[in-house]
Length: 204
Ligand SMILES: Nc1ncnc2c1ncn2[C@@H]1O[C@H](COP(=O)(O)OP(=O)(O)OP(=O)(O)O)[C@@H](O)[C@H]1O
Image 1 (tube, helix red, strand yellow):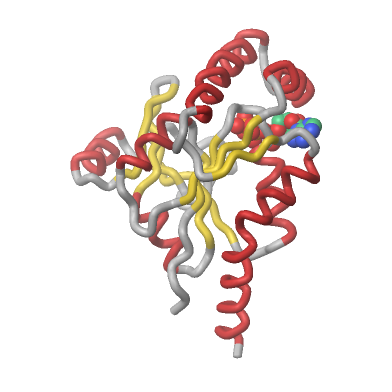
Image 2: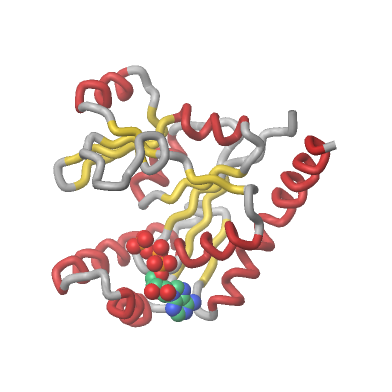
């Protein structure tokens, strides 16, 4: 079995470009990465699958998992609980893929406190400015005026945290997308090479 690849925690304000960068990475290197599947107490939406989009659990099951120290991080948003279980990350690691965790700032802090082995790397995706972030969120067409203001306020908090020494291993400024993507690839290239080598060996 290949050595365990360190998971990567990616964080950054909503609209900073995390999904755009990861989509490109997953496309260029298929079968090398996976997202951990989160647990949630919210009901599945049409088309969503248990184990694929989320693990759908009751509040009681969720709380039991908290008691059993089963979560790396968990939080409540608009009346529903969400969490990343240690098990879902370990399963991806055991599969030989690199596990990505896309979490907000409190998730970053919890994962740091969880003292995971191997220690994940923490990457922050930073927008070139708050004005650019606002323009991108507006351009994406997914926000109401209220949700836009909320996201911008949270963004400031995330930017302040990222400025603290030691908060992240890498900061990627997503101004020019190609430059930002090359930086991300550069951070991960040693892992990608290792994953690809292990895959080739397994095929033999
Ligand atoms: N370097 C860039 N230059 C210009 N536009 C960009 C750049 N990177 C991303 N965008 C655009 O900005 C918008 C927000 O990007 P994206 O959805 O990837 O952000 P996100 O960080 O994943 O947000 P969320 O956390 O809300 O999922 C998208 O419309 C995307 O096409």
